[in-house]
Image (cartoon, rainbow, N blue to C red):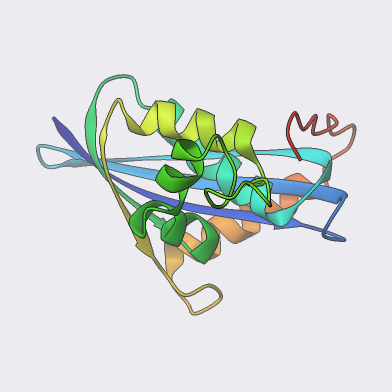
Length: 161
């Protein structure tokens, strides 16, 4: 399997419910060649957390075949939800935060999509401090902000918030 490093970031101008964007950088080394791909997009009436999730989803969906992936994100929301098993518990609890079903998990539509694409790869999520000079994170931050400023952004249609 190919080894891929992915950096992701999301932004929302006027969080929540402002225009938002996501950015991702994929780096794949095959033999002695390194390939890089940048991906970005945006939505209107969204949140920062949704754009963080979209960055990871779109980056992983761009992979054409199963890969070993290290995905770097400055979103503790995403990294902790995966690494600490929160999203697994939410799913087991019918997308409620706990078994007592008092509080619904947020962004279920995107969590389902992320879990689906993760199942096709071997993905390790790593947290990286944002705005700390990491070239991948800084590039994604720029891509996300530029996308959020785009014209005619589609409305973020949320199915579960």
